[in-house]
Length: 137
Image (cartoon, rainbow, N blue to C red; front, side, top):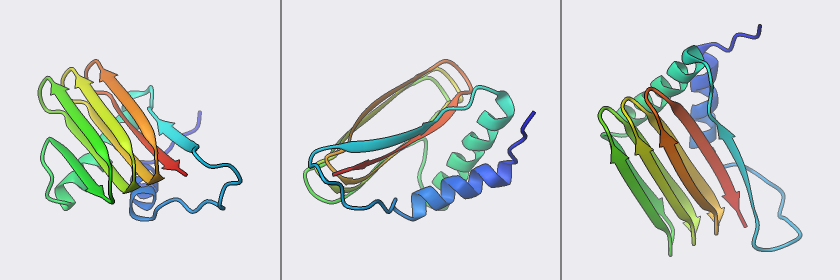
């Protein structure tokens, strides 16, 4: 059984959020690449949740937040339930991102970089966590 420490998860999340992904310039225009992490076990899910809540506190955010840098971005956040934390952050131009949370105690971060990234996340249930990182071109 492989054990991933909470510190390793928090560090990976912090690095991914603080430093935009560095990719080589793609040959074709109008694409995107995404990485989603949604743990199935309670321990890892709790570590991701803690990382997102710490990130939110550090940035002065509350239960839900949309932060955008760039032009022509669209974002939506809908939360049904209690004690959820949802983050949609976009850097670049022409992004479209939505996050819908249904249930209690959920945590999710949607992070879009580059341009033209498109994501629609639905998180249902209780005490779930996850993050999606997308780079568009």
